[in-house]
Image (tube, rainbow, N blue to C red; front, side, top):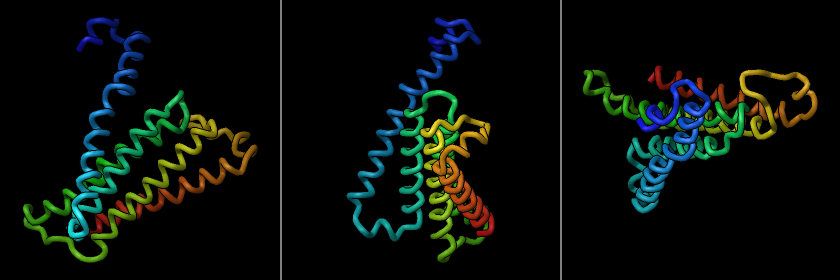
Length: 183
C-alpha cells in the first residue's frame, strides 16, 4: 500500500517500485518454503516416494525454484521473462494437477490409477523444465521477447538449438496436459 501513497499511480516510479517489490520482496518467502519442502523430502526416506503425491510435489517445487531463479536473472525484455513465468506458473499448474487427482473421489469420480497417472506429472514437468531452460538460454543469448528476429537466428546455430529445445519442451508439456485430461 505504501507504493500507492508514495508514487503517482501510472508513473514510471510507480511501475519501478512494483518491479522492485517483485524482484526483491516476493520470492524469498517462496524460496524458504521450497527449501523446507525439499529438505523434508530428502529426510523422509524412500517410503515417501511410494506415495503418489510426492513426485508431483518434488517436481512442482523444482519448477517453482527454477522460475524464481530465472526471475532474478531478468535484465530487460528478453525471453528470460517468459522463461520465468513458465517455470512458476507451470509449477502451480502441476500442483493443481496433483490436487485434482486427489479430489476426484470427492466429486464421485473414479480414482485415476496406474502407470499413466504416475508418468503424467513427469512428462508435464519435464516439458516445462525444457521449455523454461530453452527460453532462458534464448534470453541469455539476447533474443528479444515476443519477436523472432531472423538475422539473430541466422547468426548462430545456438539460437536454433534453443528454439528446438523449446519446441520439444512445449510438445512434452502439451502431451502431459493432454494426459492429465485423458486420465
